[in-house]
Image (cartoon, rainbow, N blue to C red; front, side, top):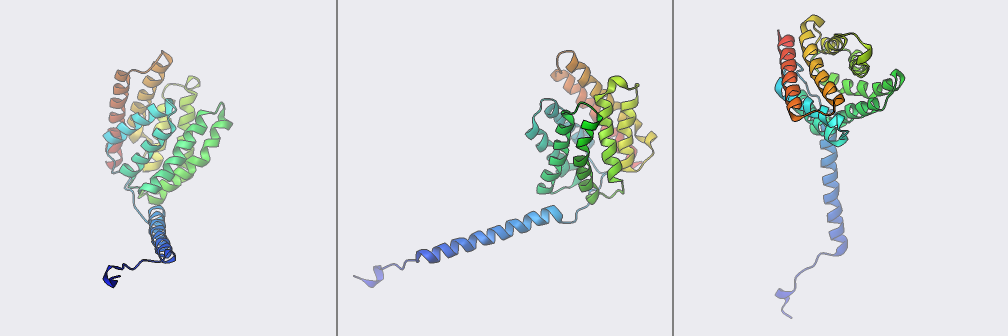
Amino acid sequence: MDPQLTMPTTPPKSRRRTFLKVLLVLFLVTAGWVLYDLYSTRTAHLREFDPDEVARLETAMWRSYYERRRLRLFNELSELLRTQYNMPLIRSKRVAYYAANGAFVFWKGKRRSDYEKALPDLVKFYQEIRRMSDLPFSVDRAATLELEWWIVHRERANHAPGDLDRALAELQAEIYQVPIERVMEHGRLRAEAMTIRDTKAEAGGVSEADWSRINELLKQSWRSLSQAVKS
């Protein structure tokens, strides 16, 4: 046989070792990327958000929440965190889980003691925001105020007109470290959007025209907040 026609072959053990080395390199690269994503230092300039985009995503999240579409809500929250809070991909997924899980824990509640079971997730959520934030808000207070407006909204029949407006404004006043009077318009408009959703749902259903009106009110609300926290 012509020796030039004889092709060398790689032993099976050598191929296996090469394959394992490639897998190890891929694993180390992926692990390094994940750790960098989760723990690298980033800064979120909380005043620098796109109010119309926040309104669009909030409208979508409300629809997902009331339709009990957990995965869609999770993805929308993750998108909000990436685009408005400068959060990297994997971290945004973890933090979105905290908020989405807290929301559905709250959904199942019947009384305050049940609602408060959502608080640990909200604390974790705001811890992650605070870790990146350029504003020195209190994590515990922000989480408590978030839960409080959820409760006021759920039990709105037992509250005076304006209580929800104020509860929403108190949260933003804490996060942005501004007097509550400056963000009351934001709270009022956001509460009005919630009232439309609730009233229409109780009357039989929320139409596409209703959702358009809700989205428009949320745009006005977040534009008002943007202007208030930058002035």
